[in-house]
Length: 216
Image (cartoon, rainbow, N blue to C red):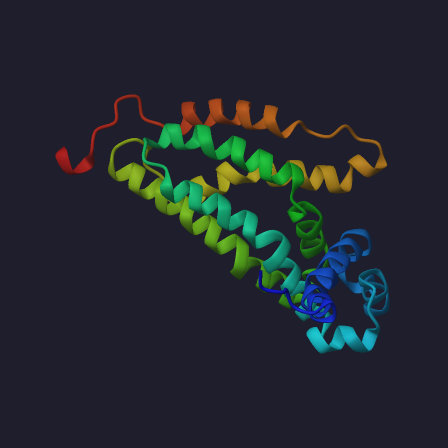
């Protein structure tokens, strides 16, 4: 049996993840502007000097939070969408509950709210969030819609706008949860939202008799 790396080496390798976990908690609680590197370092169990060995700026830590804690969920959803072999209606039946499940446990809501509220003062945050998460997700969904339109499964319309229509109710529910639930509002049931939204989309987007455009 091969011995593992020395304990001090394992500890060193774990530190970036520990810093990201601490930063996620601090960003979620305090926002970006009010988050202090001293507090992130303290929660991660490292000195501020050690923190700088891994991340030069607070923006670098934010990038790491997005890549480590948020982007993998987006990649998982993208992979499931791209691998689905059936018609678009069946894809919606898989996609909406998946989104509801991911958003119920993912930190995307708290970090997304932070980006929205502080993006004007920190445009780099908004730009990074847009480029790393929003654009890829909208791109894959609108591409799937465009191909479904070519098969005659989806009514004419801008695929990108359709993609935004599909995703927007979940974003609204998450902003509601992060903004109003802490002051006493009832949260939305994301699974119930997904089920009701599915009926709305099927009635509004899907054609009743799909036939490929190329055959018409």
